[in-house]
Amino acid sequence: MKKTVFIKNAVILTASSLLLRFAGIIFKVWLASFIGSEGIGLYQLIFSVYVLASTFATTGISTAVTRLVTEELALGQRKGTLKILRRAIELSLIIAFASIAIIFLGADFIASKFLGDLRASAALKILPFSLPFMAVSSCLRGYFFARRKATPSALAQLTEQAVRILIVVLLIKKFIKRGLAVCCAVVMAGDIISEALGFAVLVLIFLADRKNLTALNGRKKPPFPIVKHILRISVPITSGRYLNSGLRTIENILVPKNLSKYALTGKKALSQFGMIKGMALPILFFPSAILNSVSTLLIPEMSEASALGRHGLVKSACENILKLTAVVSFICSAVFLVLGQEIGFLIYKDADVGFLLKALSPIVPFMYLDSISDGILKGLDQQAFTFRTAISDSVLRIALILAILPLKGLAGFLGIMYFSNLFTCLLNVGRLIKVSRAKFLFAKDFLLPLAIAFTVTFTAKSLLLHLQIPSLLVYIITVCFICVFAYFSLLFVFGIITKDDIKNVIK
Image 1 (cartoon, rainbow, N blue to C red):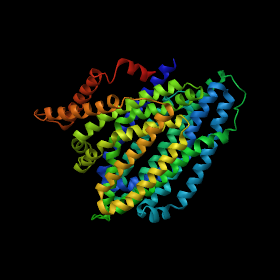
Image 2: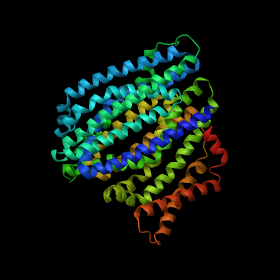
Image 3: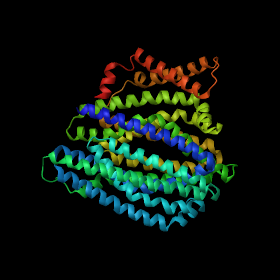
Image 4: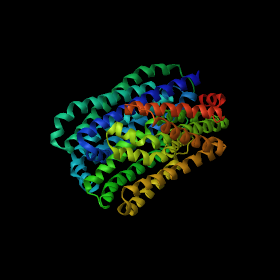
C-alpha cells in the first residue's frame, strides 16, 4: 500500500512539475518577445531579491514540518500534529511580515545601491506582499508531504502558474509602452494574486483533510518543545538557503556589472545574464522534473527509515536513486550537447541561447546529482553539512566573479559555473555515500552509461543529417526519440539496468 502511494505521488508530482516547467518556458519565450533579453535580465535581478525574501519565510520550516509531522503521525495523535503545523505557520508569518517591512521601505535603496538599476524599485515595492501567502502555503505543503499526499501541492502550484500567466498576458500588452520597470511590476503583481489563490486552494483542502486525523491515536503530546525542534531543523536549512540566496543575489548583481567591464556595454551584459539565468538554465533543468519529485517525496521516507534504524533501506534507496539520476542525466547532457543549437533556436529563435545550452550541457549530470543528493541529505538530518557546502560554494563563486569576469567575460562565467557545480556535486554526493554507506561499480554504473549516451546521440544526429526533414521540431523530436530508445536498450543489453534494478527503484 505504501509503495503504491509513493508511486502515485511521484507520478503526480512529476506530471505537474513537467507541466509547470513547460508552461514556464513557454511563458518566458512569450515574455522575452515583449521585453527582450535585457528585460529578462532585469526581471532575474528582481526575482533574485524575491527568492532571497521567500527563502527565509518558507524553505527550512517546510522541511521541519514534513519531518516532525511524519514522526507525530507515526507515534503521536491529532492534537500534536496540528500543534506542530500551527507553530510553524506562526513562525513563518512573523518572518514574512518582517520581510515585507524591510523590502517595501528599502525598495529604492535596494534598487539603486544593490541592483544598480532604479527601474527595479516599483517591482520591489510590490513583490513582498506575496510572502504571507507563500509562508503559510509552504507549511501546508510540508504537512501534506508528511501525509503522503502530493495532489494538494500539485493542484495549488498549477493554479498559481495558470493565474500568473493569465494575469501577465492580459496586462502586459497594456503597459509595454511604459517601459521595463512597469512591465516587471506587472509580473510581480501577477505573482501576488497567484500566490493568494494557491494559498486558498491549500487551505480549503487542509480544512477537509484535518477531519481524517481523528483516527490517529498515540502519545498525548509531542515529547519535545515544538518551536525548539522546528528551529533545530529549519535554522540550518533556512540559514544555508538564506545566506546562499543572499550570496546568489550578490552574485546576480555582480555578474552584469563585471561582464560590462569586459568590452561590452551594460545593456549587452544584462542581456547575456538574462539569457543564461532566465532562458538557458530553465531548459537544462526541465528534464529533471521526475528526479526533483522523487527527491521531495524521499524526505519523509528517509526520515522515517532513519528514525526506525532501517539502515539497509537507506543504503539501497541511495544506491538506486543516485544510479537512476546519473543514467537520466547522462542522456540529457548528451542530447543538449548535440542538439543545443537547434533547441535554442526552436524555442527562443536565438542562436546565442543555443550556444549557451551547448556550452553548459556537460555540467547537467553534476547539477542533477547535486540537486537530488541535497534533498536526500536533508531527510537524513544532514542539513548542517548542506548549509556549509552551499555557503562555501557561494563565497567561491563571488570571489571568482570579481577576479575572472572582467578579464574573461562570458567565457569566464561559464568556467565558474563548471567549477561551482562540480564542487558542490562532489561534496554532496560524497557525503551521501558516506552517510548511507552506498556502494557503486564506478566503471559499470557511471563510465559505461556515459559513453553509451554520447555515442548514441552523435550517431543518431549523423545518420539523420542525410535525411530531408522539413520541420526543425520534427527533427529534434526524432533525434531525441531515437537517442533515448537506443540508450536505454543498450543499458539493458549491457546489464547496466536490469528488471531487478527497476523493482528496487520502486521499492
